[in-house]
Image 1 (cartoon, rainbow, N blue to C red):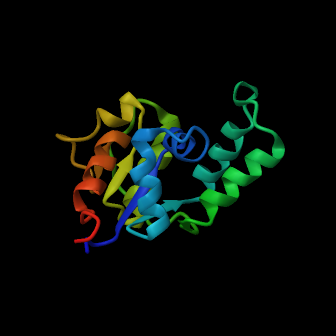
Image 2 (spheres, one colour):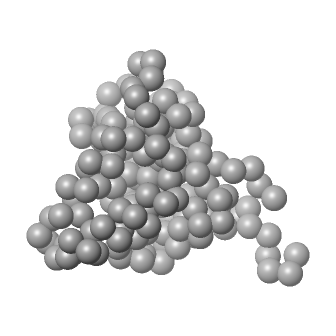
Length: 150
């Protein structure tokens, strides 16, 4: 069995998993449900999720919003406090810096994002975690799962 990975999911990935049931994120959801992935949040990322779920364009009832928050909340660990500051390169989208800071603070292996500005920080940058698209993260999760009956 593969080691449990700590991850941070940006808000759009959480929406894909818990609102839109995107096929490319189903392996991430399964890994969260089985405990193969541990997702981290903090008050800043939870607040952003709450605000985004209330966007009129999603047309989610208050009950549907609460269900997403509850379902996701049941599967995450909450990082309390701010912790020691971590030296990180700045993200071109200042609103996403909170996800970088959280991933570094909790020692996450992955930051999973759909944001092109966040994804561009992966690879050559010196970050203490990998920055992956949901599709790539799902591929890596699936590659570690033993086939049925194995």
